[in-house]
Length: 238
Image (cartoon, rainbow, N blue to C red):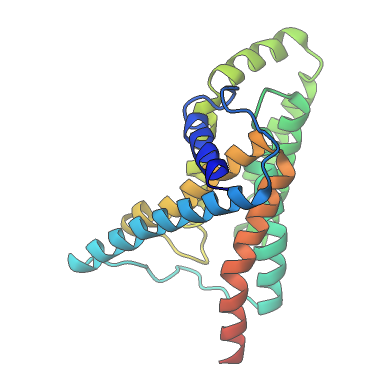
């Protein structure tokens, strides 16, 4: 058990530098050590988050700004969207295309991103321009799908700079949790608050490439369920 945890930690930190490297191949390790490492990394990131929040409080800085457009979210909708729908769509959007370049996976990720954005944002602030832009991007990749030269060009640079894509997608994933109108926007607080989400996104990316897409979806589902369900149940009883 301890050896497996140590091996996964080494594999994870190696992944953060060389995501397609094969130095630490998966040896059929069970899910338990991966869960332990995820919890350990998440706890450490939360400790840094709490420390940063404490520093902001010491300097009397506003932690959470009141949302500009507060939205009354029902318990059932929160469970369906936050704990079931969101993890699947977010993993399709941010992690499904990761790994060695695949034109089909990229197109599916773009479609999932468009559908997810429309589902979450349409009732709040529907944008025809955003819809048109997304449609044009998806159409472009569909049109070049069978162009060998273009696909070879994209694939070469995709694989070369995959590490950049992983960090950018993880950062964007983290930020999106704090720029939604339901949460409000506070850039001082965001600089601290996004860190646990960023670290979690990196670990989901690690699972996506090393273990497969189903693993990152299940970890994300479990994470949201374990964090949200107790709080929602308590709030429903108050």
